[in-house]
Length: 175
Image (tube, rainbow, N blue to C red; front, side, top):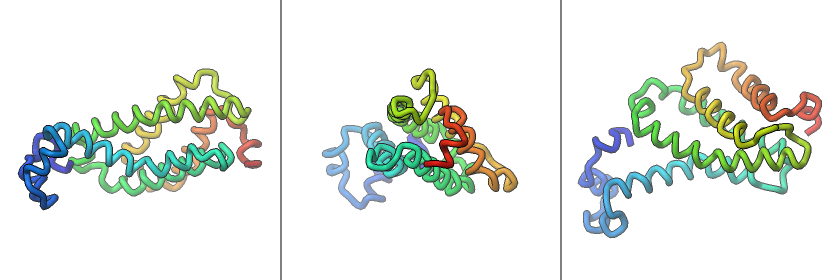
């Protein structure tokens, strides 16, 4: 993905994977099919564990949200040094991010609806709040934050998120 979709040839892919070209075409009908599968695998690897934890009904909802937020923040801090690089600013990265955000929105909406039902959240329109949260977090992820802002990053993001979710300060202390 560093070279982008147009910058990578099938020949380079099979050489890097050390497989025969015929084997590549056995599994993938085209380079686009391969790239789509690569994007899906990357998304699953990036958000899979976070989503598992978020959807684990054995853990209290507010704790799941805090854990998912912590995982997001760790991911953001790992990517921070790369923010100016071409791989992050490329069209392919934006396609990747759009795919990831589209997958996350219905899951986050479901979590918000669950939180509303349990009385943990007070969100009037979960269908609007979910993409608002996801795109807001993505925007912060792609922002080149100063060291001063990074110091309060976790606390500030959690405060903003809980405000959008209608979580009171009292409730966050108890759970």
